[in-house]
Length: 268
Image: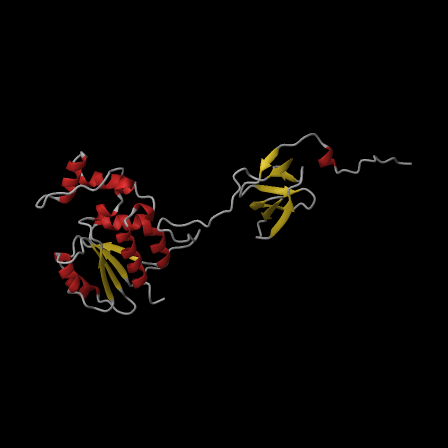
């Protein structure tokens, strides 16, 4: 008569001690008793959720010797840094849409004064603009804004938003902006002489943006006052490299760009 061992513990649970492996997201393992194979998508106290290649989810307890990793028995444990995950966000603070394709460009546009303005908008709002299908173009100044608007031929399905530097009461820019009365055009601006000033000084590592005397090129004057080489292109690249998100920009610019994006996408 065949004899049986009184120990009915499965072999994988009777073997020598096995390594403990943190159940980090995307770790692919196989549950030993069911053969379910999938990637870790969530690990909570006492349980782990796996997702197989078909998108099916299964929840398993974090039992000793409960999983196979690359064919070897392991004990999954909760990662030391396990904390409630937050949805990813874009540099502008919007909820990110992983894997989203850029939308076909709208007829509507956003115009900004110069290349630096366009680069800064792309830096912070680029992901949002691609999803919305909004193209940003720069004008090299707004002196001819009325004729630029006329050439664009704005309409209900082709709205135009314009961001103007130094749009303050009594300025040349304010008079130009007031001359544009088309209901399908929105002209807004920030109070800064140049978009450089819209970057928070603390982000650049300076106490404040210097005051440049009238009659002197503002960007060159800033470089001189700060002791930077008088190369405004290199200075701008240094400033731009310090911008990681909307938190590095002044509210006076943030609100105006968001306003323009809402305006040109309102047809939705």
